Image (cartoon, rainbow over all chains, first blue to last red; front, side):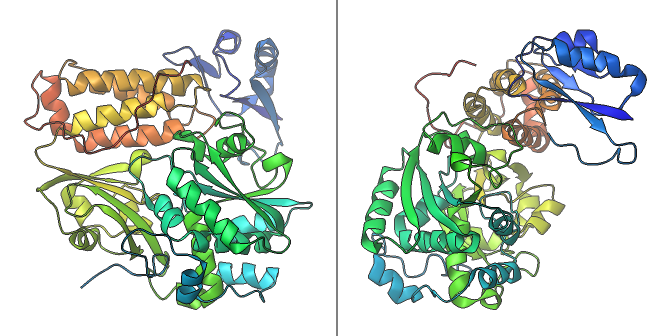
Length: 77
Length: 420
């Protein structure tokens, strides 16, 4: 099982906690807004991803569970 | 020989008077009431009509997506046309309102809607008045309530989720998708959002059939389409031509160029610059323009002459696009603003590395909005840096190019910059 991180850019206010808590998949652009790497997150990193999701003050992050056999399935935004 | 055709724009009054109901029926004949829903969908499918609002999505698929939903449905005709260099939708609304309204009725029948809204910009006061009077003239159709809605005059208001918010009286701001409008739109009902030109084409396909529709255009991109041609041409305006018409022939139809052309903007302010030689070798089809790296989009085309300062034009439009951000997403609000500011310095030859910073930022705004506003703006600006590379090189060395700002690309002025 793996997962994928999504950010809702309309909800995001650029607090930047996600990049602090989950630098493996989140970096910040020149204005402090998160650039999310959409590659699958292996199970061992998932607790970090979940911490980032939980810490977001505006609930702009979502963790999508990927079925083991459909890693390439189109991700809903 | 003329390349224009008269389908949508058949028999217009030269004085700009709209065709009234009788004149409309005289030119096009009555709208057949016989076709049931499945035959309608089948006719649209066989016509292979694609949306004329810019995205080019197959119309039959869009109709079927809404037709297949349960409950009461809505048709939302998009006549907002917030793009300053485009005038085609306003031409339809102003001159042939009954063709658009026929299309609204056809679409409502095809998807099973009992409510329809024609949305127009608040600034389009003439078009609003013409539509209202056309609606009064027609009387209420059976099992369908049609009304006209005016929405704030902004660039993003034409984006379909922003339009749905605006029609409901809210701010014209996009919402996160899904749900898409065909799932949840006006009042939460499945909603067909369709450009008014697409609807007008539906009104013709129902009358004359899919084979007739496909008699002109290319095999993959059949039919006619409206093109707004502006810039350094003798007779700028809206033309109806078969898709696949060579750009050279369209420009000849407009009386030719007024000065030697330097570049052509294809597809409006979300579009692509091509140098004149490349552009004039292209046909007005996604296939031909796509091979040259451009998108035909909603077919707003502007010819920029030699002797104009392209960077001044691009800087002005970049500022407009930044100011027209709906203000919801950080990368769009701050990114487009940074880019526009630097493009301004570059146009004044006051930045020696502005192009490099802009390219870095373009990569940071693309794909990072809730709608495609930053993506479209990025395409426009990136292609400008590519096509006007010589001008950029001069400006970054502190020299101005010999051209002047001719103010060919129109923008609307805003009273005040919106806060982010």
